[in-house]
Image (cartoon, rainbow, N blue to C red; front, side, top):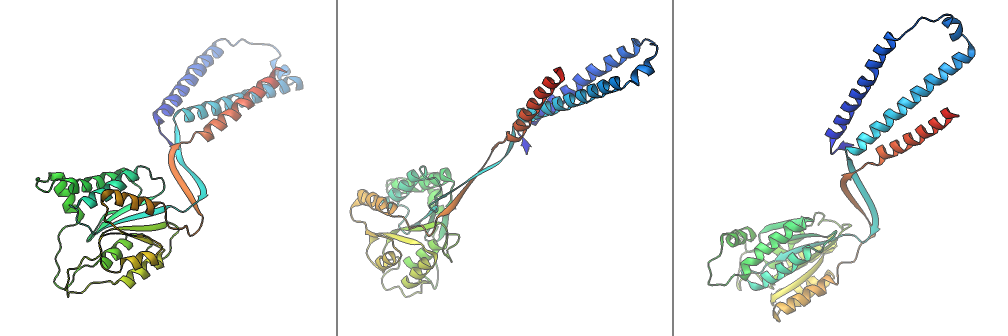
Length: 335
């Protein structure tokens, strides 16, 4: 148990020590000065009645002082704001993980609309995780830091909103460079299947089914490779389908141009394939339809939420019990 305001407790115990010293020391001096010789005191103190009264008085004083000390200590600790970890567990649907997979150029307005939509959605998430992958970089690993994700998505979306004939700002240049820097290969050309495989590996447990509900949303052309390209790719459509099925990932595809076997991948994994030919409105409708059809939960999951906060239960309970015992002790003594 940590104390948020520990100086309060220190000051309280210093005041307690000072009060005890001021009460005890002068009383001892006065008792020594005021002593008077009395006759037959030894005979009086040997009486059973006197011994019982003295013993009862001593026990009552000890009990009262002990209860007062316990009460004061508990009050000081409670005033110092004891803190600790709290947690709650509830059974509900498994959390939803969303990986945004963008093969469309960052300067394209469609990319700006896509990322802006999820930047706005991030503020409404509760247990979801969101991530972003470009053709050659994990731009945002899966995270529940929604403010960071929204800010990053907004910065990248601004690149696509900038007029084509305008000079990009330093922020836009940085966002574009961090999204998908140019990389050239001698014997390899990436394909849509390669990009989807890269996005799938962005899920922490992509090699086995997870208690989470993973879904992948791809935006980009149906084919990334130029016609007649002879350099090899790493994955084909069937391998990507098998990877997604093994991990239980729903693959949704928003194709800005036809090509490849994207429709088969989407249908095999329970996702949706949408050909974007109606502008921004069509994309928003497609995204709303995808979000209305999330992956089915594999099982009911226990969601454990933990947070750090004030935890005064123990000192307050001790103070309440000490107060009750002190009140009862005073009632008994009066009788």
